[in-house]
Amino acid sequence: MSTRTTAVLAGLGASAFWGGLYPAIKVIMEVMPPFVLLTVRLSLALLVLWPFVWWRGGIHWDRRTWFEVLAVGAMGFGLTLGIQFIGTHLSTASNGALVTTATPAFVVLFGALLLHERLSRAQAVALIVATVGVLLVIDPRQARLDAMFLGNLALLLGALGWALYSVLVRALTRRLDTLQVSWGAMLGGLPVVLPLAVWQSGQVRWEGISWGTVAGIFYVALGATAAAMFLWNYAFAHLESGTAALTFFAQPVVGVLVGVFWLGDAVTWPFVLGGTLIGVGMYLAAVAPQPVLQGGEHARA
Image (cartoon, rainbow, N blue to C red):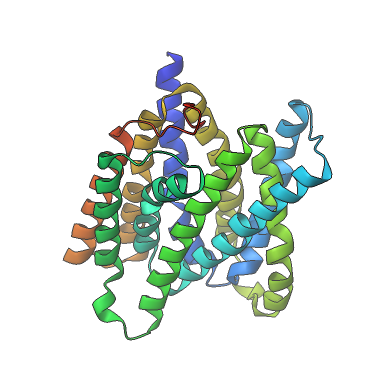
């Protein structure tokens, strides 16, 4: 098997892990509140990834670099993932998988604003199409401030936050190792979620935790966090960005299938149409020319 084929499979594997993430979270949060689960997820992922970081030489940053990485992690792995967990709890697993698929289009926007990357016509169209798709999925006409609408809104804010986090990480990885930044960022998320986890600890339904719940927790921490991050980084290391980004389409496919057949999520026409438009937007963003940074350098994936 060629390296290119292996890289494509790695990207698809990472996206498949993430597609199954939302249904798993939905089930686990029936017995464990969002920030307790997020704390467990980050802690286990940090433990699993550390041997790989150590094997690559460990981390030897100065104080300023540590502050930058930890701050970005606090925003990405703390605030953003916390919002996504809350959104998944209030909404559906299928919506969670689909709305967050708009993240790459938002990355294009933040990349243009913060990294001065060129926004091509194709990328602009992709952003517009994906935005329309998200609006169809969250259905703002149903703005009755009920749990479903608030959940969809939280998922949208989570997608925006993760896009911003991704662009900030891209800036950091111009001069720092990607795996080290990923580990440090997850570490930065812990101080944000840990106090909230302590506050929510009384809401854990210990009597409802089964072996299936434990298996789901390990899937979220080891599969959808540690393993998925490694596979995704491998894909971007060996493929051009456009091809690697196309593998992201596995996420909504897996997420919707699991949500429908496992959790019984309803599939409506606005949902299908919105999901289709998000997919079209992602395709346009993936096949568009790679953004160019100031000085003519292509962005590192």
